[in-house]
Image (cartoon, rainbow, N blue to C red; front, side, top):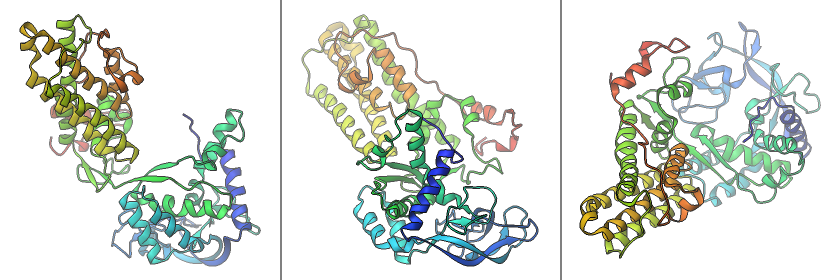
Length: 471
């Protein structure tokens, strides 16, 4: 619930003090080397300001520090056909002095950390071990640029800390800043020295910085920091088969998205296709399917007809169950099983599968409702109908609790209609509890509507070239 930036004075102070400790511990050294320099721009080029062809995978737009396609760490000298990202001219290499973090000193400790941390996802573990097998190299700490945090090392005047080597320390400085604002100066230590678990949500191109470099820096401080508990490192999300691009206007930006459709439509769709094991592709056809079939026809239908029947036949009160059949008990068992499975998957950060567990429960509950047909039973077998609706209400309550971390607005709407708190929804929708007459949670959308909204001019004068391929 706190937002800060790495320009914060707290961050600058922390980074300088941190790296001075690492320097004094013997893990920082200086050496002269050749760095890319653009004679046209008259400046040394930081790693992200030089691009070229990756020598390992052939990607034509790799950066001087890393290839975004294969994720391999790079040195600017390794790039084939290098060019200045600002003017496009080829750079020359000039000798300059810089300071380095001696990452190879931590190779054995990092190998043990990665191999023993069973919580790491497969892509993070395998890629990190691959880098360790290939051999770690010292990581440059300083740059010849005017902006950034001034380097604190003796003789490093005019140098600044390389942004990616100070940004990972922002997690700690943000915690310090938060508790300073609260007036509890030392509380930040609870998060970094007393067994707290830190989880980092990153793209796969950030694996080296969070699984190797950040842990190594924490080790190098020799202060006893807790190492990252795990990372949730996703593969890439594509847009209609293309890479998201700000410059080429490929993609949907969040302000545009929220002008088009409610936020939970986006939350559900993106979490359900979250690229946890492989690259995934967002298309408008997938978006329509997730909203219309999953949210509206499956989840929304179950909630609306369950609560509508309770209001119509039981005076808007969750009915007391009669004698339960094997099918009723089986359905209640499915509810408990889904809650346990959801909790397990969420704790393992397998969010896409957690979403699938939610929708699978909704499908089973819909089938149960159809099979039991309470609209037929209510006139002649009222006890049976009351049991069916009681069981269906338990499924709806469980779904509202499971949806809380996924689609919180939808979850709150369902609990509002059930007249339940989150704590109650996690346990039971009690018989006799009065509910609110339901309103539809979702509505169906069409490709025609998507095309109209997606191509309408916005304050940024969007181009009609962004029309979905299916239009």
